[in-house]
Amino acid sequence: MNLLVNDDYTSMSEQAAAIIEAQIRSNHKTVLGLATGSTPLGLYQSLIEGCHNREISYKDVQTLNLDEYVGLEPTHPQSYHFFMKKHLFSHINLPAAQTHIPDGTAQSLEEECSRYEQLITEIGPADIQILGIGENGHIGFNEPGSDFSGTTQVIQLDPSTRKANARFFNSQEEVPTHAITMGVQSILKSKRILLLASGENKAWAVKKLMDGAIDEHFPASALHQHPDVTLVIDRQAYHLISDESK
Ligand code: F6R
Image (cartoon, rainbow, N blue to C red; front, side, top):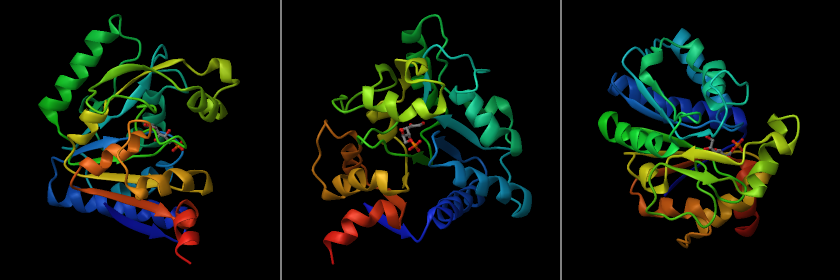
């Protein structure tokens, strides 16, 4: 597992963007695995700048998002469809038909999970998968205790995740109870993984990840089974490791 520690959130975001842009320059038909949440916002801002000022074209790129809340229409401001449009897709030259996000409003969620996993096989795997990490170590919405052999599935959100995500809703009760997420196995199919973490609230999870034990109670630890994972983090997320090494 490679570790890149940046001084702050901005340089972390720019470093991740530079890696993605190098990938797109080397293959204009790149498949990108994308995440939502606060962590990749700076990265997406930097990718938008790259599209406008550094001649990076998304004309032939395809994207596969990790997850979506069950029950939220794509037009709901807290849906991940809405998030991706607002923070990235509507600002770059990426055709809408080449963006893919699980449909949390599908009549049969089971069929939707199979369709999405099939899609990952057809257009993927992702050349680079972007991940954030939950304070409890979740990746995508694979909560502690998730089966590491899982593919795209409906999961019940952990109370701690609903609490963490309540900041985007009017109240914790409004946070959906379920989501569709790529499973750990679907994520591990990606050719390369970039996990971003910023801020002190992620320091425990980053330290536990670097400690190395593979444990289904800590989903991110599954990444030790992948040959090409890079953690792109900032000093605050690194501080429990750096404090120890003093
Ligand atoms: C979002 C996702 C989640 C987030 C994680 C961290 O698509 O898959 O695993 O990456 O909850 O969220 P933030 O970045 O908001 O701290």
